[in-house]
Length: 174
Image (cartoon, rainbow, N blue to C red; front, side, top):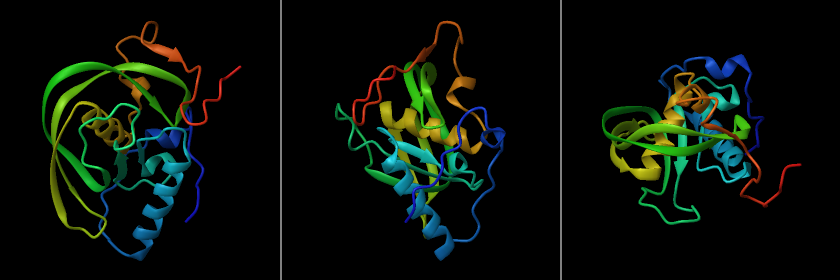
């Protein structure tokens, strides 16, 4: 496994739409291992998407089981070709991103979603999610379509904030 470089805004590759995964082979599994290693290395990252590493295939990893405040979740998820099939409700919440490390922002997302995806072996799965896990999932699926949370801010003037502290390690920025 390797820790790969995370693309950061304004890298134009973050705006590229990803292609569906068609081959579920050892090469895919090796990349997923690297994607997970990179996610774990990032500060307080609950999710990561393949395009953040310049790999434009529809793969995301989400794990909300280690948040500071416990939230309902499905544990560690590797989702290939995820598609949100239903959504309900709306709520405003603060988001951050490994590809936009110096800022957080308020984004409106669906409160509840239904999702279909494949696992890393190509088996189909269905999920129902709500709250924080649903928000994290929507954030990562946006990466697959070349959308960043800063593209979904209600107002760049009032809903974008400079990050002061990274949670992991507690390092304060100067």
